[in-house]
Image (cartoon, rainbow, N blue to C red):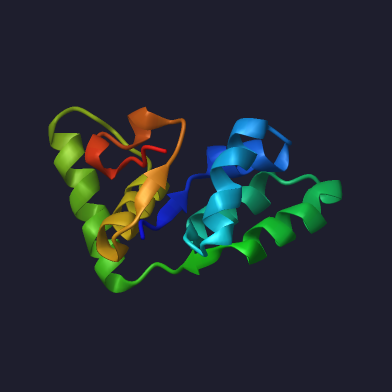
Length: 125
């Protein structure tokens, strides 16, 4: 069964009650195939309002969390360097989320497709 890394934009949409995000995430939770990068946890906390803390924690706890390992860090650096040579500058977080998906065999659920130039990594739901 395909596992899916939920990017921060989709997580935020879910937390804001956007039905398309709910429809995407609920089946993943039912099959235990929803994953977050630890960096997505960071990004959610960085943008969270105080009154959103309980919902944010519940969301995070419903997902499997992927840490950054040395293998993922190396792969993330390779991804950054590969695209920089092509004139595409990506954030470190996006490169590391992409690397996590590659190393762990996940697809990425995101609306920010430009952040992940390798389209075969994107989840088609």
